[in-house]
Image (cartoon, rainbow, N blue to C red; front, side, top):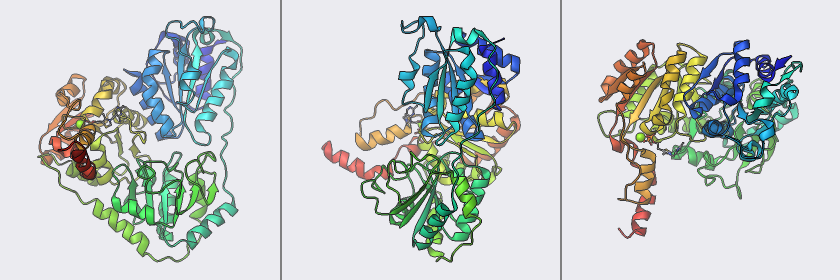
Length: 552
Ligand SMILES: Cc1ncc(C[n+]2csc(CCOP(=O)(O)OP(=O)(O)O)c2C)c(N)n1
Ligand SMILES: [Mg+2]
């Protein structure tokens, strides 16, 4: 006989779970006991939001579900931020959450949550385990759901008395992965479409890629003479140094790449959902009248045809389609279309000077030129991130950890997870002053567990992104966007980390070297000119319209 916590921990071990992330609660003591018994490392965090983002980043990095344990009510409420990232980013993740005893249900007992109604559309699948002996079955299904088709987060609620009860239920071996294959006929149809097109554009994105898939995409696009755009925060899907790489369809994208997307006569959507961000809010390609042939490859048939009608639908993983394509002999193609796309990307990457003594564009340029190829870069949300997306060249798959969902606070916990996954490796988190303060309490988690990420905090003393929108939409009426900040370097030292403050661009390389050599989690505060990140040239038309509307 084993208690539910032991049964659960054995099931995790059977699924190859090498680490879990948690904030403890009295609701799942039996699960903690099971983890202790089996010896699965438990990264105990300071707040469930950070813990959930670490688990999500673990899922992104490894392709296997990141596993989280949080308590009921307040614990799971805090964890929502990370669950939402996993949902929008299609990341495999399983959150085990505590629940009140079965006999108290529906009385709104202490910290009770009706998980099925709360998480119905928030996560991919939610369930509550009522019988101890069915734990192995539910956990198998949780892993299956997190990984199948379009991956995503699963919430599994564990009533306290169910978890501590004894059962003689046997372990279950993991279920076989359900991976849709690609047929020769589908590959031939795709090849014909590409051969017939004059201006084909590959748009690569989505989850479930691999180093091999990124290498295949590079070989395929280079030898076939095809330009490749990647979607928002999926820049590691191809070596950015390749002559086929044309840039990212991000928020604030290169307008020339947007124009190229519009002028293409064939879009090969490789693994991406192709939503509002790569299409400029569905404006560059109108779902009602797309005006372009579309071949859509996605592991979930339900995502194909969801927003855009398609001419060729291949419900398969991009990796498998690329593996087939890379073996074929390419037809000849005019090199012009690919070469101009690349030239436009390189022009876009030329540093555009910002005001002040610390030039963020130069700092990112230095990182791009000097970090090892396998350095992992993370970020959350804010205008500072646009500099990373624009000026950094990602060289390998798995080197970009960033929320396509635009969640502030993500970069630091993601960097901790990346550092734990590969101890001693180079992991750099770029964070805004606002962004970092959402999860910087995890600094002590990093110290406790031996993670050594380097955080570069871009301090402009404001929620710069929102100030930019505010100045454009309501000129001269600033409110609610100023920040009074701590001394970030001193704070890092107080946590037992390394701290640096940089006030001139030229001082950055030495500060970075000291941070790297410290062998501790490190924070480098960049004191940038407030206007660096809040002047919205791209919105100047909006600003003019707003001024006219307000009669100024
Ligand atoms: C969790 C969360 N809360 C609020 C927002 C809205 N938001 C987007 S960017 C931003 C400001 C970010 O400030 P900071 O990190 O300092 O970066 P900056 O824009 O100044 O470069 C805010 C508040 C968000 N995306 N996520
Ligand atoms: Mg800021």
